[in-house]
Image (cartoon, rainbow, N blue to C red; front, side, top):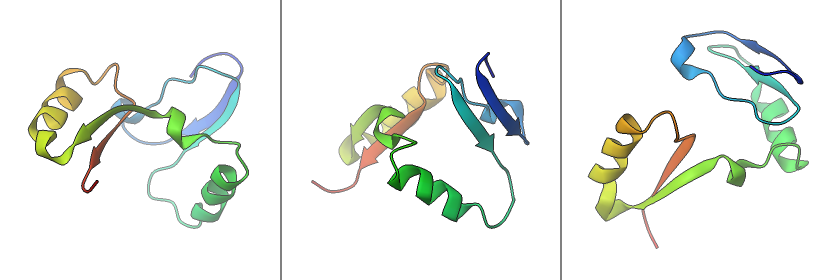
Length: 85
């Protein structure tokens, strides 16, 4: 985590997220009853999920999506595979 951010991280180090802007960040592993808080944050605009997506792949290119997600994991925040048009 970086300056200007507050948060709790529980879990393996490879699951941490780089925080680039001031943000209260809670990353929780195996805890219950946090979905309403996450849904409210997205619905209110506090969290922009579209900004998290760094790569988009077509379903026919799924092997490339998997390979790139492993090989370029330092630069990929979230890769999306479109299943249908």
